[in-house]
Length: 217
Image 1: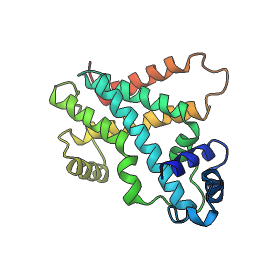
Image 2 (image 1 turned 120 degrees about the horizontal axis):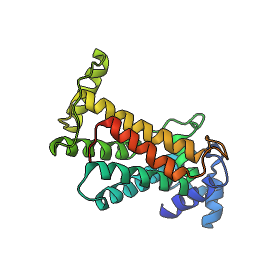
Image 3 (image 1 turned 90 degrees about the vertical axis):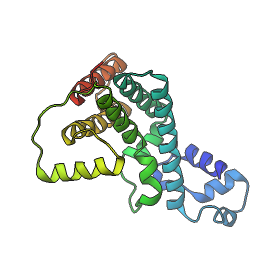
Image 4 (image 1 turned 45 degrees about the horizontal axis):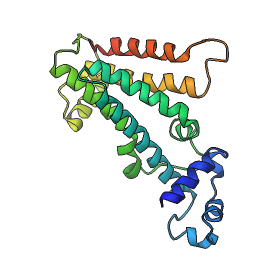
């Protein structure tokens, strides 16, 4: 199975997800094409394996960066953001599989992809909760639409969070904003000559997101 995933990764670097081929995997493994179906039943199953593999590798990179960042939740957020960007620039085809154009006809099975797919979000929420416990999270009075507050309260219960609904709403901006920044970089949406130092730009933008989230030093 590890070899199948490895070969699938290599395919992703040269073809679109829609064009992944189990027959090509079988050829690379040196087995007849019928043998591969004992392990992976179809292309969609291969896509799911590759998605989970990519989410887990990204999640591992973020967790390691946060652990090495020290005790400051804000430093942890910045480390998580850097790790996300570095992994994504190193693995653009796998990042595109996760956050690019959906693959026509494929629906990721939630029971297999939701947990790995939310690892970065969970890490960021844990840092928000840590900041609240340590008095490093600014609380601001904000009005939320009733439906939004209801949904955020459900998230708070699911993950055992004590941060307020407004603080969690800002945390969601941090999460989605981070991947917006990374996508602009990975997919070269700034253009060639707009910024001479994209890493410096990225760090500045993440600092702004951390300010918005209310994370203090």
